[in-house]
Image (cartoon, rainbow, N blue to C red):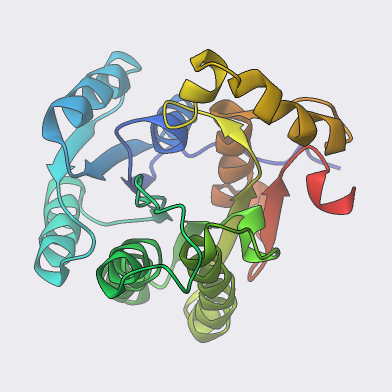
Length: 259
């Protein structure tokens, strides 16, 4: 029996939300596995730094400033990647609204709802549609969505986020069914609590560690995941090691959902 192949040699990956945190970790992990990588986010300076790190690993890189809430930006991002690298083998939908309002659905404004939905759900649809058309022509491809444990639990006061991630879980299944005839696989990674730049303040603010302790106590592995843990799961899904897996979500939560 041969060892599963985790290599991404010769592959081209497009990663949204690739300037920091989980997206950056996935970009660098894919580059280490042999892929050329295009990273996208709204802030170009941070993206350029990630692109430099990718090039330092001996791979080609492209930094694209784009807002996935805007179809024009998404189409331009996909076209630029296709033109630069001659195709798109892997799409990672990872961009996320970083200022999710901590409000109940009753208190949430329509504008706040739209911002979360347009980024965390509609944006994934727009990217999958644009990149998916290229993959259909190539009769091969791989789409990986970043979901969350919040897709399965009503996490108040992050109702809009939880609903959007639940939508991502169903979109993953729908795309998997629709694109399977073209040899395109679609899966998701579902992080639990991950220490990233977005959550670092909890380790430093007064009382932050006390807020985190109940999460740790409930987690069977008694630790939070790192961005690299989520990136490793994404690499598995992007590689031929998971060639018979589509329509599923791998939760990277230390066992939190089963506790």
